[in-house]
Length: 198
Image 1 (cartoon, rainbow, N blue to C red):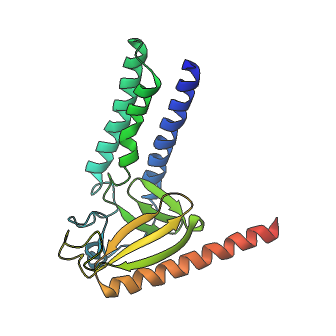
Image 2 (cartoon, helix red, strand yellow):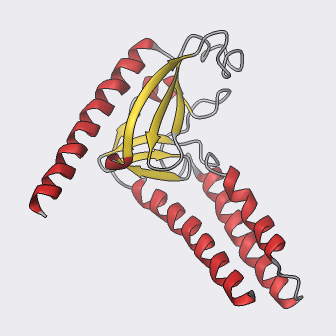
């Protein structure tokens, strides 16, 4: 049972490490959106905070926090093994912080390959659909931020957990809509070509 717990723990930890490494690598690619100051200030990952530019220097705090979290989990795991307190509940407690760490990086950007959102990278062909939900009086984001009130929640349905962000202006909503329409159309064409080739 102990060996099985160790294997599951390292598979889960490996998943979080590889996902983080993938985001760091994709940040080196050409960013398609947001590139101007207006675009950066019109998109919110956190309602009360302007988006950080998708560069290592601007995302430094989030990168350090996530790296320290990974390091902390590994150190505590080995301490648990050394002191023989490693159980299922102990391993679950170690992994629990990562379930709420998607937005440690205040990051939202489109690259040629897909979407960077927090510590997640989603390829274009993994995005099934998107919609803009108006932020009105009954919306859960209403009142959190003056800029977001009367803006839109962008929700992208993926094969996993949906991606969400807030678009604060009508002009930016149209810009994002055009970009998403273009890239999602292109990715679906590539998938169809791949199926035909097979």
